[in-house]
Amino acid sequence: MNYHEAIEYLYAHAPMFQKIGEKAYKTGLENTYLLDQKFRSPHRNYKTIHVGGTNGKGSCSHLLASVLQCAGFRVGLYTSPHLKDFRERIRIDGEMIPEQRVIDFIEQNRTTIEEISPSFFEITTALAFLYFAEQKVDFAVIEVGLGGALDCTNIISPEVAIITNISYDHTHILGETLEAIATQKAGIIKPATPVVIGEYPNDSIKTIFERRANELHAPIRFAQDIDIETPACPLQGIYQTKNRRTVAVAVAELQQRGITIAENDIRNGFAQVLERTHLQGRWQKIGENPLVVCDTGHNEGGFRYLAAQLEAQSCATLRIVIGMVGDKDIDAILRLLPRKAVYYFTKASIPRALNEHDLQQKAQKYGLCGRCFATVNEALACAKSDADTNDFIFVGGSNFVVAEVL
Image (tube, rainbow, N blue to C red; front, top):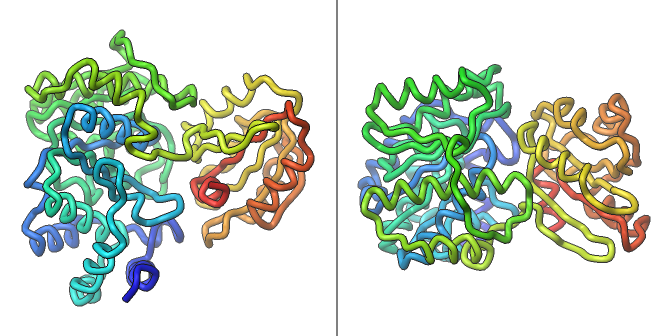
């Protein structure tokens, strides 16, 4: 079995949420505990930080990993989804898990995989936890996959838990209201373990977190209520201001717990996040003359910030290459987008992708006009061809669209 065969086996035997959506989602932690028992609870061999929330989990996770690396720790980082290569999900000090380790894991555990039929994310989480133990990391920053209470990462006992924010996403699974979603996300709060809430949309949500934390005697801090100075950082999206503050508060909690992190480590960690962790797809510049930027924002909460940044962008003509998946609240996003832009409607090459003509039709209801393209790269090529050097091109709408242009 080579690496390509190992990954294809994984995709075939464990349907991936990233590709087919909620049909791949498995409720409950039964398989997680079976796998954890098989591998002898590898996550107990290192300290962890748990990062949940609707948006900003990836950026916060990468910033935390970078700060810890600068403090001299060996740091595992587990995130999802990946953009180009499965191995992006599992890194140590920024380096992806070797192809051979993925091959070995699949070959050694085929019987287990075929017996218990775990989800793609359950298998991947087991591999990450095991690999981090084998490589003797000091810390692992673990991003929640979906929700919180029933997410298979939720067997860890972290030094600190983070819930970045709450907005609408995956409502068919997590609930139709912000209160229901917050209740699910609050499931990562652990007994007597500090929890940092990045931001909350209203007092009702704040109360849900406070009640859960009080029940568990977990110290709770709300980053949006704290005036804290954050170091300079190369992450350019306006939404990163809140992520930086959330991470700064979380690092202060780690320091309170006796973990040695100097102020210089924090400054360097923020400044060096891209080279240390290889984070991609966050307001990332991928072309000049005209300026081309991509971003993986893909739900209403994310696009509130992206739309404001696009409206404020200084350029002659704003051009937007956009594709979305069909199981999102598409109308909620489209109504936020600038009408002044020229649109290039497209779709990523995955089953979940919304047909570009359907997207165009929905967009027209909100005064968003443009043409359709069968592939993302055709759409981007046309946008570049149409553009003058002082135009601005944005590429986004889903992780999958961004993946195809990177």
